[in-house]
Length: 224
Image (cartoon, rainbow, N blue to C red; front, side):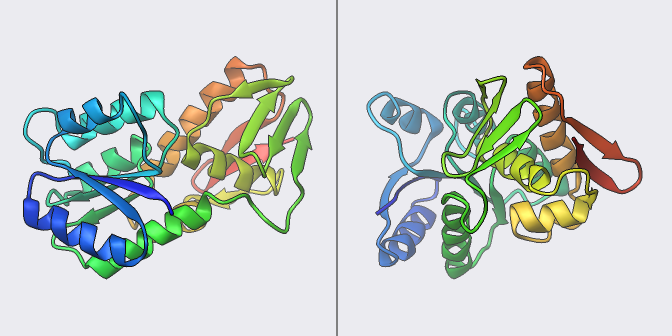
């Protein structure tokens, strides 16, 4: 079963999260600081991170930046800091979800399960999408331009695949939020904009012919 690492400076939160996740047969390891987790990463990695933002020493946002710089692994934030800025920043950093404290442990388990389901190979679709000089491999969750791999995070791949599966069709930001993030992040459409900017930069640097275009006042589409 999947391994989940939880970082929170409150022991009661760590124990609560561990208890509910272990009921779902997940293997859970807990840490009280970002430094403890970083030391553990030297010898092993989990399948998912659940991070608090307010931590002693390096905070959860800083830790998420480091994780995203080295690993393509899912991240869920669970934090008492529920302001819109923190939620949007967490999503912009590549987090897969964000829950504000106090939260329902059952809802956390639901969201963990949902994220893992999304990471499974995409079924009932073509194994490969070929769009000019870009190839999208759904089973490997990989994108290449002229045969060269593009380094995408999980959310970047999911968003690019979603648009590539319906080339030239425009989607609103709200549609993209609901289909890629799986929840209605009302008022947080900046997360979509930031993810699109990262994708656009990466594929342009590789010389991709398809264009990730902005549909002004609406959303985005992949022009092929």
